[in-house]
Length: 95
Image (cartoon, rainbow, N blue to C red; front, side):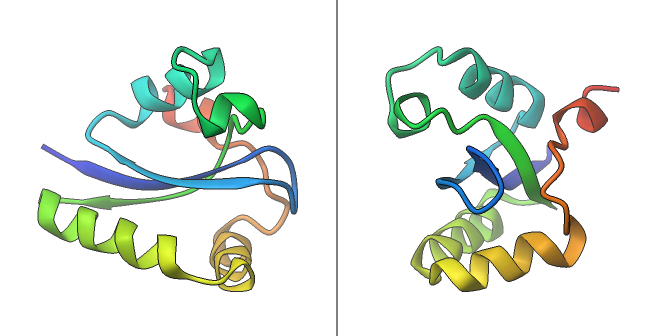
């Protein structure tokens, strides 16, 4: 099983959210549909802008906790290292 640490954004340089899941397509879909009243639904945070894949949950959880402590600028640099235009990556993971 794979585990994913991901970052969603409302728009470029907008509100961001760091999360973890074992089913990235399903979880991002839930965010997009605002299935659960939460921070992401309140601030319309629906665009998948970055993710990493892990083989074990301990490593993924550790990485998520690490990223949640990062300053905003560090998260922006992480996103822009692989996605400089802040494109929504959701469609690319649905194939």
